[in-house]
Image (tube, rainbow, N blue to C red):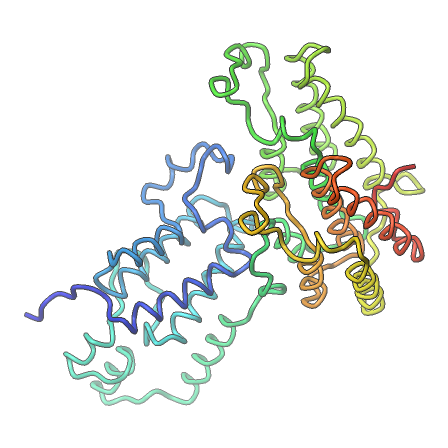
Length: 432
């Protein structure tokens, strides 16, 4: 018998790394990059259903540790990521669809790198794809399907070749915005990009409301579920019977849990009501809840109530709107106040190691420019929301009176002036 493989060749390792990098840069890969955290991700039953968890980060670690003996072992683990996704998430939910998108890219890239000459529709544990080395040992020079056909005296038909080529091209097709590689808000960006957007879409309006809430300094107390032990409040769940937090609300939005804007609003109000129920009026957390309530009421009215009382219609981001948005963005980038906001924040280079502990939805002018180039914005309100996010992040992290905070004020005022020319300022929060 042939000896077992003892590890991947250098070429195989390089090819696998290229595939993993490609997957990791995909905007829909965000949920699959690290192991599932049932608290952070709001899915307490995950490990009751998924018995063999796997993620792309773990696969990369195993590859770096030379833990894979065969290319087919790597393929099995990557496919396991997507089979787990399909197992836990119901069909047509956002995360389910994201898994399918990344899986299609994996199939195309795996084939393109020559790691598998035949990508059969196999299930985990039902068989392994032959490596090139194994094929040579058996005397095969083509992929296994074609080799079997030749042994049977057949040759692939032109129709079969066309079908394979069409399937391959379909798998390689990128979703819109696939080159937005490093957006930490990738899930929300994906959802906005792939949603069936109609005028006045309340789901997109709710996401914009939540995005602004999460960027408030007063929201820090309400971003995640209360931990009575860590936070020193052992009686919390004796008093609060229906806990809720902004992180859970975001997960519910991502999973299409809400069927009306009122349900979303009720959950936000539940966060605030729980705060006021547990924290006496003279406490810091109570005051933070009141501050967040004021922001919510203002943003809710702005996003959900137009002149006629309904949800304001979303202006479509047509060619004329894209040109105008590019002009606005170019003017913002040229302004002397823009220097802190041109590129994504690098916590190491800038000496702000806690930045991403505080800012949960980072945004910058270069990322907006990429999104415009990829036509990722479906409506004007989303473009303005990203400008608002830059401003909110600035005020969240930088104290009043600091140089960067002053730049944020100047950029906000300039943005308001530019957006007012087209009546786009209705989606920007500016002091009255």
